[in-house]
Image (cartoon, rainbow, N blue to C red; front, side, top):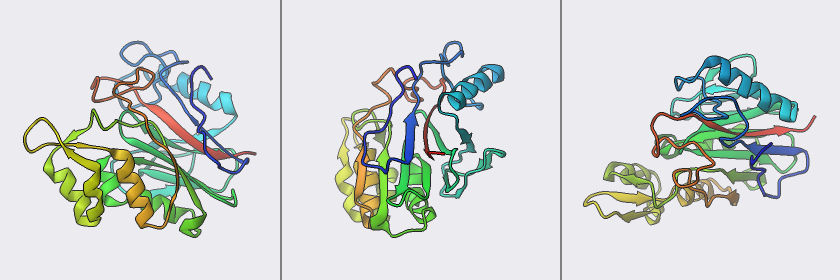
Length: 241
């Protein structure tokens, strides 16, 4: 598994999760080496080999998505690439998968360990409610949901315009605390992790773990803001067979 991450959170033993890094694949620069995105102009042959290595590492079937920065959450299906930004499953061995390179990957499970979900949350999807949609997909009370927030752009790297701040504050005024003025007039530095936590808390989900990463400054991860021509890493969650 090279330097891949295993989330440290109190999920039930049957719930398994992993975050890949750049290490362990066959893609050449600038996609070196474990690029899992098939839409970034990398060699398709290399991407398929990288995905095979991921499948074999855990004996899972990842359900890949065509992510569009929306709020649609579908049932995970390894046999098709759905246009959605989240997926859920109750079938052991099928892995809900979020591909990112600065956006926020969020992994979900219920305390009964009967259903898991994953979401891809750029600022647009986060503001529009993709995390809440993933919570809904678990079909349980919010108090019974656990969430882990994976590697995303950090607060020292995420400069946004006033329209981004306004998009969050219109939905939830308390999210103002996640923005501080930047050195550039009219701009703000945004912290995606408290934004996610505040949105989840407003939905009744308080068992939220993870956070504290920065894909831009951590060379283990692909980062679009650091290098627009780059690959994608994956955050996956599944039920043990």
